[in-house]
Image (cartoon, rainbow, N blue to C red):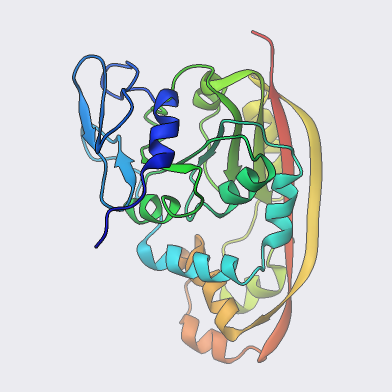
Amino acid sequence: MTTADTSALVAAAGLLACPECGSEFEVPTGVLRCARGHSFDIARQGYVSLLTGASTKMSGDTAAMLEARAAFQGAGHFAPIAAAVARTHPSGPVLEVGAGTGYYLAQALDAAPDADGLAIDVAKPAARRAARAHPRAASVLADAWRGLPIRDGSIGTVLSVFAPRNPAEVARVLTPGGQFVVVVPTPRHLGELIGPLDLVTVDPAKERRLDAALADRFAVVERETVEYSMSLDRVAVGQVVAMGPSAFHAARSTEAALAALPDQMPVTASVTVATYRTRPA
């Protein structure tokens, strides 16, 4: 195995903070080392783990889930959602929390050619994939619920796409007036598959609860609904099941349920892309 390109980590090193003491890091040469001597090796796959202490309670996505998601995204089924994220005019540096494959961060960086990117995820298979997502995307293994290993006020745009979020930490790392772009499914998302495949449903109050959870620190400035029909074959439908929360919760035999579906079927993609700005202190 060849050693991955670490130039993105070199570029992003100044954004990161030591998870042990909060100090800044030196520019890496195979290792991140802070001013107080704490060091973190850069993996051969190009990411750095800044997880410390006891094992995190967050398990993140499995390698199989990420494989399915990469295949589904690579086929372009969620391209209109990625395009909507890019339309929020992300400014750098750009951070995606719960980045998974790094697909949405890569699209955001293409729309912001002068920006450096950071992908943070708690799952090691995700950190490996995100390290290859874009030449300007640095990949960090970390648990956002413990605290983002990022300097205060250093990030211009934070992305959260189908991912949990820690509002206090997002607000801390954003620059004054920075934007927080959140993508959540509507109750119509994948609606044609919910019954036949026993998928996890979306709470109709999800959008309202999101606004309430962010209200202390953020004000919504724009909201776009992205809804369209996808034509999916059984392979793509199987990827949808395997890549999301239903991979853990599906109660029926997926193989039998998939076999009962048509060879090709229309499936609705429906999400809300909301842009929030930090409130004045």
